[in-house]
Image (cartoon, rainbow, N blue to C red; front, side, top):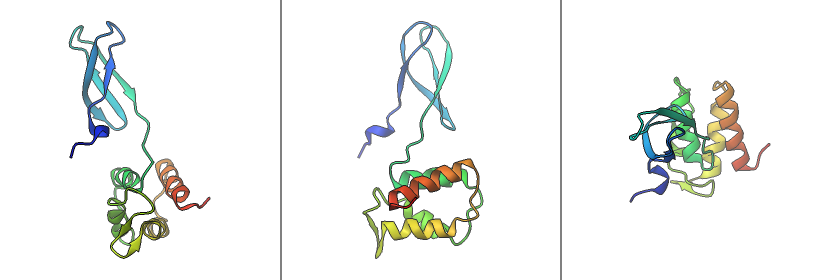
Amino acid sequence: MHDAAEEPEAMDCPTCGTPNDQSGMLGRRLHFTCRACGMWYSKETPEDLSTPAKVARLIKRDWTKVHYAAVPYLESMLSLNSIEDNDWHDSGKSVVLYFLNNARTYRGDNAVRYKAALKAMCGLK
């Protein structure tokens, strides 16, 4: 099944106005090369923190040495499209809460943002 969110984003060239497809992504920045005039340009994309799975993918990319106790919960969160989903016999909310409890060594600006998003999904402050 093809997800519309995975499709390459198009953007008009700031010089000539020709619509171009993305040529690559580095971090959160989409890069484009205009086929008409050859101009290189890019734009920053916002992080999608709408589901536990999307937050888990961002955490996996950012947290290089995941604490061993957080690994199973991080892997489990990858299958949660909603906090209401279940992973085997565990509720999505319990998986997220267990992850947060075992992710105390995950620090930094990204960690604060991602953990806040997960807490908000669980109804915590």
